[in-house]
Image (cartoon, rainbow, N blue to C red):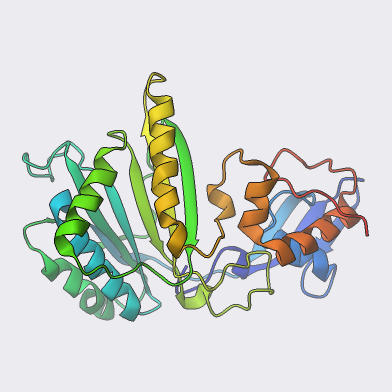
Length: 312
């Protein structure tokens, strides 16, 4: 993403069927307003039967994660923040609060305990990649290190038998660098432990090629955000649903002072029109509504993150 941009940035042409059955081709020169809306506006405008993408060859990447006890959370987050400041476009990183899995590669003293992870993926020259991830591999050798060369394609995550609520924010100015380490450690530990054992918090690293696209070039407008934070409350039963939903929302409330007010549309659940408007921002949403009014005035395509048609 940071090297080649978002998926919508690499769409060259779309062939689709509109609500009235018309077959259209949308690109920069044909139906450019519709083409703009399709790049980030979801399934609001028709059924796309064929996408034409700009492709980038990626085979082997240097990727994986390092894992640490939650007591190292403040220091690890500070290290992550400093590394993302200077990361090349080829390197994308993610910080996660999670529960350490009960797996052979995790020390027994850490299995099933609150932990933090730094995940990375370098998609460029392997020699440069080894140099780029070396600080991560050398930062704390007491942690778990699973970073190495691997195929770009890999196994999917099995998320069956889980319920989830996701709350999320886009951080425009980045993660603050707190000064009181003892307070930070206690704060991070408290936030993680109040979640379900399956709960996670992901801090996604943005910027790079994503930020160099003008904010009005596509329907994805939040180009200046440095990070996207996804609070994921997961559990297996229904008895503690209220507690875990409250935990996720309280965590999100604590992020508000650092948010740009936007959210990432692909992380939205069934959060209504207000959530959809927050995902796009007022100018982009208004423009999308006008395109919707032109190509789907009766809102036939409404089982989605719905954009209400505007007919002016």
